[in-house]
Image (cartoon, rainbow, N blue to C red; front, side, top):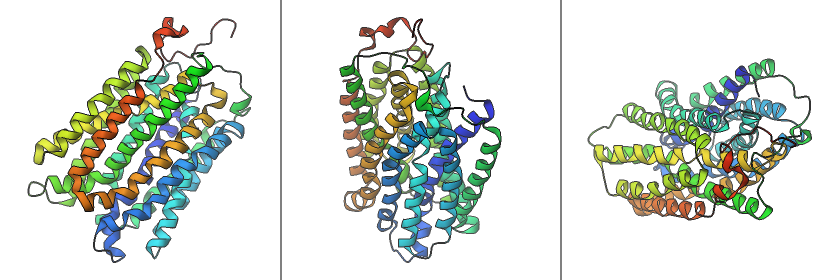
Length: 403
């Protein structure tokens, strides 16, 4: 079990990971003006490399985390993403900015397959640990909306990259000091999965976690990259000040983030399948209603939609903790993330053209359909009552006698 200072820094790293990924989206309107673009939608494709490498890079990052060590990989994360953010602040053209954003994506890809397995290794209540970690990550999303807006208004868009970059490098220095060196790489440890499933069910669980992660990541990328312009459009005439809109958006993310803490605690007590299915099924009607609303009713529906979207996030990490041996969790997480995040990076590419062609209503209806696809994938999850784990808590990692 990691120490409290290390756990705090790992949770903070999750917040930073999501903050860095959304600085561009939060500042895109100002960046578009600075580089001579008439519409922010035309600038969005330059961020697709960041999200594509955020997914693809998870595969080698996970492998290095298991075989080399999670502590050194987290040091690469802190220092690398900080330096890449500083580089983005110095760019003089959109192509240079796109390249720097892609480099941010490379270092951002390290956290999920490395940081989360490091945090939950030997955790007594992994569901609660994952929930708190998810809260931290989504508070980073909220911070991206709020902090970026404040920095852009006060000092310009480049400051929105400089300040977090310097902070990440400082966190890396603290992490190096307070986190003990690993005595052996995770791949050499002797720890078994919490639940021993037949090979066929393990393959099915991996398929479900990957498919659900693809659809969940699509929803996450569409919303977190598009919510700023979306609420500006749907609240036009009610709230028009950019700073106030940023506060309202940060409020949505802050409220929604706590859903992960609640879901994490529920995961420790109840089977995964019915919990996940209920949340996934609820997403579609809420998104459909949001597509046909405006004003404050829309704001309430968007808040509920984000509660459900964020609330679904802990399940894929919980499945890895439940079914995968700690010696290879980073590699399995890396494979899952490489597939899901690489595909969902298309959401960033499609966001501008879809909104430009059909408006946000079309986008929200499409998201409702994606949510239904998540529900179909979750139906394929193994029934926990048919496994040997029925007598144990869903994420209990205590080894059995003789194991």
